Image (cartoon, rainbow, N blue to C red; front, side, top):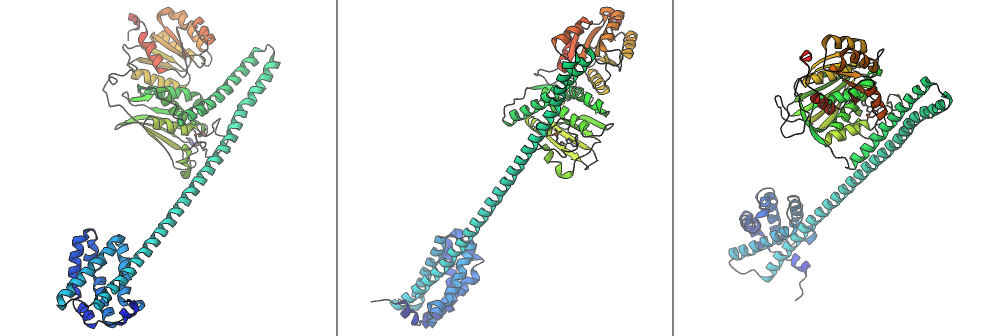
Length: 548
Ligand code: ADP
């Protein structure tokens, strides 16, 4: 027998259809219970959002059977379409959808069998199967098209995101390339700025003959320029090594004040040349950190140099170190040119300078802050910049993990600078106020009795009056230089005073000269605080007249 769906459709089954329409709620109840047992994951749909559609669907199914509708116009198929859409949205899987209709088929057949009290005829069964198959086809078709649309949408969104990501990468690469080119131009410019005077100096040397004054002047110039270039190259190499992960921190337990003192000494000449005032606030108690001394000094020096460079002469700089909770907080604030808000986070990026044309950069190429940030992060800390905007000054805040508070001694088990084992009476003769004040503060923190003079004459007078054990003497003093001061002190006090020269020059020849002039020791600036502490500890005991 040939089964033609058209023919089956054209045969109305009024009794069957009416029965379904009459007993919609009973059928839904049975369908729901059975579906709940078989597909517990999908039950939420039966229980809430699909209930109205199910009622509708079963009623329309009854109508299709009763009215011998054409397949295209079968209203139960329209409702099945809605089903498919809802089930996709509710997160059903495709097998769950199909299984749901299979459950309905079983429920229907069982129910009709039960209610008619006779077996279904084969035409009736065929009509039911056909109607349900059409519903499944409509539902599944809609479900699949929804899924395909969603997949397409996802694909489109992914492609858009990918495109955006690529665009961002391209922009970042372009930006990096631009900054690299700018950097090369600035680097070339800075190197030429140093090379040109050196070449001129060579010419002067050739012509100077035996003019000692001119030779000395030119030698100083060459040294200054060469140091500038060396600093630039060192920074560049440092940054490359840090970026490649090749820098290892040599951590030790140290007092923040000692690092601040070294940094102030290193930046002192620049601050002084630009006639800035520097106010330093150190904690009254030692603030212990586990840090690489050289790197910590480098960070603070970089920030101090920037404060000096980016502030008009005669400005004010504040340098503060304090403990806040578990952190050592270092602040460098200035009254300088300030930073525009949009640049505050970017200035830490490599090769970034706010204004390359101002001529303020003084040998910088935009890597100092990148170095600071990387070094701070290597220490487990953070750095941020604040500024009210152009002309409003700037503040850089570095936060580093501090060691727990110890009342008077450094944390045990660490190789640290001991606080002075015995108190010394020390005289500092130094014309640089920042260098003098920080060293004075530091030596006091270590427990020494300290006096300070800002020139040679004052220093000698003070020494004769108070008979100190040690004199730390800057060689480059105005009027009476350090050599002369040493000669006078030796002549008046003999071997009762220990004379220490402080100078930027550390060659063997320089050391020989200071020893010949009567100094007992020679410290190269910036003074290594460990060395100074050792020197003071190793001194012989004071004579009774020198006891404090
Ligand atoms: P450099 O000083 O060599 O240019 P840095 O990385 O140290 O490089 O600083 C980057 C830029 O940040 C500087 O060029 C300058 O524009 C800005 N900057 C840094 N410190 C300050 C400051 N204290 N005040 C104003 N601008 C600053």
